[in-house]
Length: 330
Image 1 (cartoon, rainbow, N blue to C red):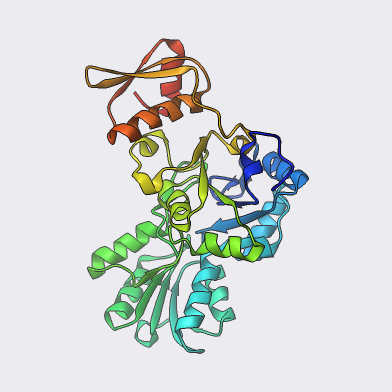
Image 2: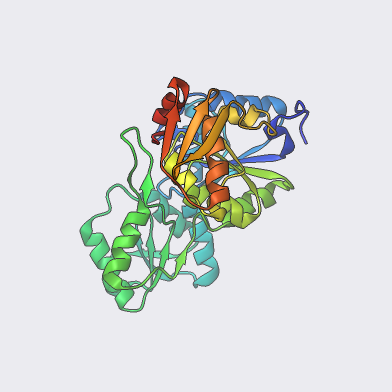
């Protein structure tokens, strides 16, 4: 436990496990406030780990990128789905097993590093590994489909349908996995990345953490992965998941905390969404009051999750209408 002030959220934890895209950066641009938040953690002596489903970068490259944008990081602090996939394959397959790889060069390097052999011919492959890569072509998908129909095992590094970018969410590896599943009429044999809890569990185990918290921007990967790992979570609204998705979230995708950005790590964990009221009027919810926008969202979440449904929301007064506009609700 750190020397946190009473009520400080992060002070209740001994490790912060960050997702990357949409939390600390977008592509290669730091998200405002992220570097400052990480600096506060270092000053407080609270360790960090970085767990990403993105299989297009090596851990060392991720650490270098973080350092370049003002968040000093070491390779050993980074866990990627590509690295986890390679370790899993090394356990399951003999050295030299021929593997057809869809994805970025980083995934290929991880596969080679564990003693497996990349091949380019579908007929040679005993395993197909599918990860995100900006240059994956339709021909690559076709070769993978041929190999899988021929009996090759099919492993996906992750199932993220989108990835965040400065232009908004773009198709991710999960979108290509869906395309393959549609063509093949079945799902991958194994999906390694989040929401599978392995990345979070391994990060906590390596650091001997007893009370880790996961910080992410996606309900379907980061938050559900934390739930499966038995860890608390903080959703930040700087990436993919939005207010509408949060209100409709099933139990396994409901974060412990919600914040606009990483500044939420240093807020009062026990604070209630004061200043806002949500009333049921003629089958709709009416938001009224004033206060922080994220507190309006928390108030709406309490009502929606208790009711087990989402209703249309309207705002009473300028403050409520402005909050709903920012939340893209109503």
